[in-house]
Image 1 (cartoon, rainbow, N blue to C red):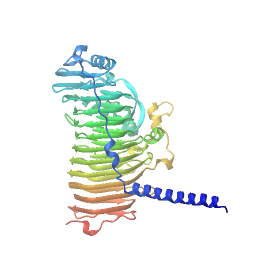
Image 2: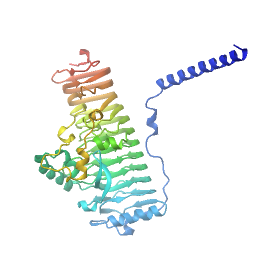
Image 3: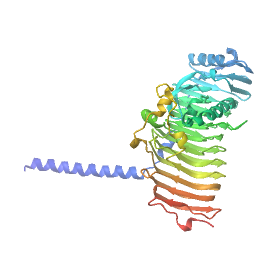
Image 4: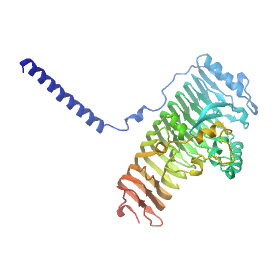
Amino acid sequence: MTLRTLRQLLILSIFIIFSCKETDKKIESEKTSDPLAWIDKVGAKNVDFQDKTYWVNDFGAKNDSTSLSTEAIQKAIDECAANGGGKVSFKPGIYLSGSIFVKKGVHFNIPEGAELRGSENIEDYPEIDTRVAGIEMKWPAALVNVNNQKDVLIDGAGIVNGQGKVFWDYYWNLRKEYEPKGLRWIVDYDAKRPRTILISDSENITLKELNIQKAGFWTVQVLYSKYVTVDGLTIRNNIGGHGPSTDGIDIDSSEWILVENCDIDCNDDNFCLKAGRDWDGQRVNKPTQYVVIRNSIARAGSGLFTIGSETAGDIRHVYASNIKGLGTKNGLNIKSAITRGGTVEDVHLENIEMDSVRTFVEVSMNWNPSYSYSKLPEAYDIDSVPKRWRTLLKEVEPSKGIPTFKNITLKNIDVSGAKRAINVNGLENSYITDVSMENVHIQAETAGQINYSKNWHLNDVSLKTNDTSKVKIENSPGVSIADSLYVK
């Protein structure tokens, strides 16, 4: 071996050793880095809007509560956008409207003293291509829409009133008709009702300090969008009744989303993350990820923080903090079905206070079977039913239908007046894994159960039950609750 060859081998050896050390350092750095460093990157960026106001009244809008002003409001928006943007606003009064579409560069403002009131006629909401409850289909546009746009602000201390009761009644009547026919699974898709605000396929959008009430369906849906801020919304959907499916805020296959300073009273999930349902959700395959929800209040509703039931596209990298639950049915509610598939992971819930909730943690992979599983009754012909029916009836390969839930962290949580502490149910072929609880203290009527779970880590946890029951744990290796954690 020549001297030159030895020298080359020596240089190569030094290079390999140096590279390995650098790789080790990088791996070690990644291990010790903050797993939540991404939370400062969510939300819309600041936009400088043109300093010009377009009053909808100047375009023919009437503030008499009875004249339909959809066309006039849209003209004001279109003129503003065509001139490079600015503010579109309202003089005091009540404005009746169907669907309006806010465009790039527009600051859509509903000031104190003004009320945007949704039409009670479904014909005033033109059908668009969208996604509802995890399925892409034709559905009425929302009252206020931001579709395929950038750089939009919607705000104001006025009122956005969906006038939803007529649509609630329609749903309940249709459900009474459908259920005896074995069609519970399709009612929600046939009972077409307008959302209040839809942000779809858009970027850098802000909703701020709005007062929204009586949604006909979901209140705010953020769909296929990124860098969106929802800040300071007050939602009151139980005025004059209890509307079905009147979710508060739904984040649907979207990313880099910030929700904060909101106060929600509704009749379904208060804050909810979704990512598509069954075959259609797996076809679209868009995750919801990098979502922060903080500094908010969840009042009446089905879930202080709900993930699912539409999980097909995956839901991950989620942080919820400083939320109060007051009379909400569930605290953390993760739900899916064996036709959904998808993975829910890297979920952090901390600094939470709950009072008078039904269940602190509710987890199910086989949620609401009568709604979740589609079966066409014999009286119907598959070739003659609507397209949305056929979409829901498309079978999912069994191996792709089983959901996965893992890496869930619950920290600094106080629960009082709950009916049940825990109700966690995985599947024999899909265990719920790696759940961590730290500084979690629960007072409930009864303890509940854990089934098909693995690897729970408890630190400074206590449970006090009125009936002195203990959590029933089955089929759950690595899951135990020491007797010392039960407070008498």
